[in-house]
Length: 633
Image 1 (cartoon, rainbow, N blue to C red):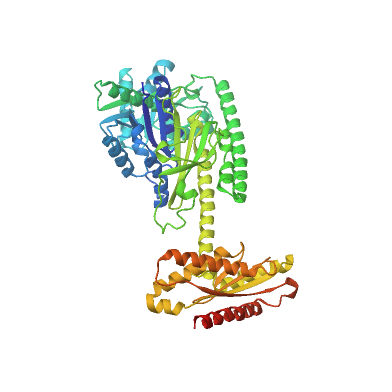
Image 2 (cartoon, one colour):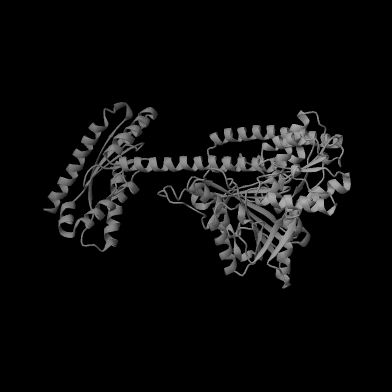
């Protein structure tokens, strides 16, 4: 039986939300033997009140990862639409999925509801904290710090606070409520409470951040937490665990939401009735600040975590500096990507592949005229941490990775994140994490460093290509691609210097097309150009490798070479004649291409000047041409 495959679309791995949602999804997929493919851009959406605007090139590069999705292999999708950098991504994904009959579950995004939705609910979440304080700790004097008065979240949490008080016959007192505006004013609210004659036994805060400012004030003024007063927060942010004392808080059950989204897809596949929207309630996280956990134990655990975090941060900083140093000296893209290999160990990835668009790696887009360049039809695997895939292995983009196996011994779990630079999508990282908690901001920093350095590497190559192309235009004849007079002067002199150094015999051939004017007059300039090109081909083919072959005028050519043995020069002239005779016999054209040739040779110790040798070779060539005219008469 074919194993089911789910794709998750997400922006960024934020510990408090996205990472834990995907954790819940992956846990449930493992239990149900379902393949999980996670498509994640790196940069998170700027905060709603932020003035920061992401450049179009950044948005294009970040969101191109969602064009990698192969809908042909999917059975279901889970999207976190509220994380996307623009709404157009969600629209495109849903449209493509619908065309293939793939059910899509919206996770945690009330602003963009779909046919199937799993949403977080915190309407009663504050009840958990207040009820815990009353039932477990027996306190009745409980104060409340909200955000902004009239704010929807604040009012919902305040209503939950009031409901629990009423449930336990505790009268609501207006003076026990204050508004900390989700920030520093929470300290002022705490000061007001503690200066009151009716001091609180506990303070519940509508956000963790306000709880931190509340506890800071209490500690600064000699109050012990939880011995003198209990404090709780709301949100369950990462700092709530490492703050001292660790904070008892209510947080969204995001891991459970991820599991619920997978279960909803299971119900859809089974043909069971599924409600349009399922709500997942928040959960209470009990820690030190309410007195339920031992301080010493938490302090030791927190200290160990902080030491490990600092150690890993120092290790990461050292490794990222070394990686950038190695990048600067990379001679090839394969070497550059190999210098990124350490990331697989640092982030404890089970596997890591770096897949680059074929057109980027092969420099087919040396100039994109400022237009955005997206995914190519084929990819090249430039790094495989397992060593199973040779560098440069090409595979269709639709396969995602070279050895995609959806029906192997166990379900697949693979994540994909973008690599881009300026207006080009370069490729992606394909990786299997052991713990998504390790794939956070440091991972983003590492990936962006790879992108920027790889982009600079390719840009440098493209600039060198353009410079080389311009240089060729400067020294090459555009019709024949042989060197022009500038090329002859530059490369001819170089050849002669090398010949003198190695004491090699120097030879100059002078070659002229016979009767080019009649060909032009009788058959047109296209015929004349053809005669010139055929002569150029014969000359460059006949002459020794490394010769400097030049077109010096309309029907005039010059070849500078070295190392030809004395008395063998005529062989090369006869070779030119033979090649042109063969062409004339097969062309079927009403004209023939014939050249007159002459040469001049000198030992390196006798060499005077290139100009002198060209003049002497010209004299010999004109003797041949004159003799042919006499014969024709």
